[in-house]
Image 1 (spheres, one colour):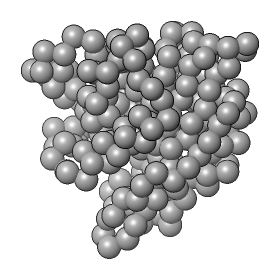
Image 2: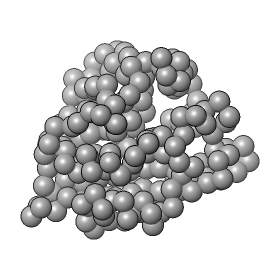
Image 3: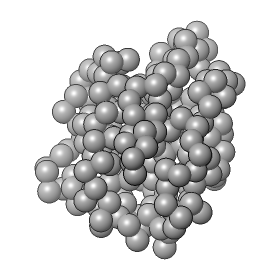
Length: 206
């Protein structure tokens, strides 16, 4: 059982996490016109704090995560709400693969700093998008390591990201018309931690 399995039942009890997901969703909506024909992928969906904002606006949304405990909480939430257009699957980003040319939009909320190889996941996501598909990744800008408390640090692979480095990774993965822009700040323990939205497109001709 990983740490996120253990935390899953308490995860939604922190209003800050709910607000973070809402802010990232709002930033995504500023970049992408959501339509009822879209198939969306949520990378690192957790308990679905970001996913839940999409269900009334798109055709389907699939959440992937490496924590079964988190997915169990999401399933309960979806079942209780009678949501019909959301599904989810256990996914290990180091070894598992996504279906190719399957999604119109890939999104993520504060997941990539937990990934061992963010570029590899971007490349996998690129392949999973249909031509014309887009990616929107919300994550922390480079910070001093104080955002997470000590018992969470073993799950943290990056103390946020330099925005130019992140943009270079997106370009390397194949995305075009990229932008990595600060969209809001998280206030925690008396400090402000900027959050960016990384955006890119899979051009039709590719």
